[in-house]
View 1 (tube, rainbow, N blue to C red):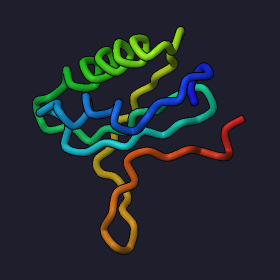
View 2 (view 1 turned 180 degrees about the vertical axis):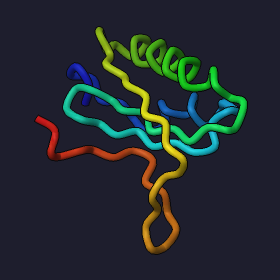
View 3 (view 1 turned 120 degrees about the vertical axis):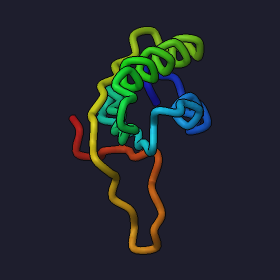
View 4 (view 1 turned 135 degrees about the vertical axis):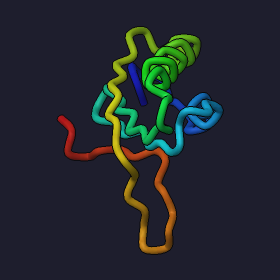
Length: 94
């Protein structure tokens, strides 16, 4: 839940649609979302673009003041089975 609004993981489809994003993970830390992005070489505008698109999407769902940060990574950790958890709730956030 963000700002009292339940956000379904499908709302992050905007991230999968961006050609500059190789892989992503959304980490919810309380009311804040952190987009962990691995981007393609030469896609320097992708982080700002997908952040803007996600903010627009969240506002359209009723989240008044979405808090979204971007963290660039070389790659994302996968489970031993090779699965990538796309949406993670960080229970240590206060």
